[in-house]
Length: 95
Image (cartoon, rainbow, N blue to C red; front, side, top):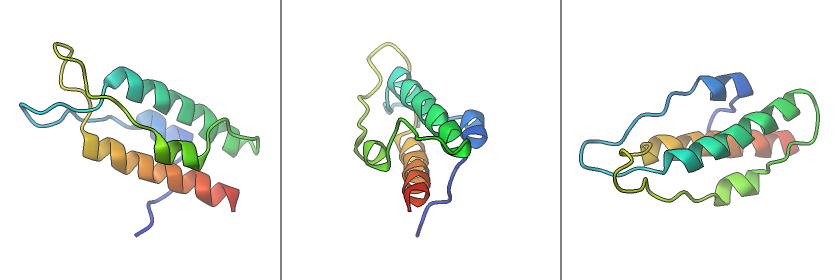
């Protein structure tokens, strides 16, 4: 099933959850930085400009787990689903 495209405004409004108690998730600093780049790229797409992020970059991004003592990070399944939407958005815009 194809993921629904996402806009810059939708991405800005996303509130990522923490993983279940006792589990570690993706490092928040890394995810937040990447999603900031994605917002800029989605804004560029909306303005019909060349985005500085590609579907392949979204597909291949990897995040470390949250460092010990810094909280649980972001839920990996939720982040992965969001990345699927981002990738689909960039792929459909290139078509």
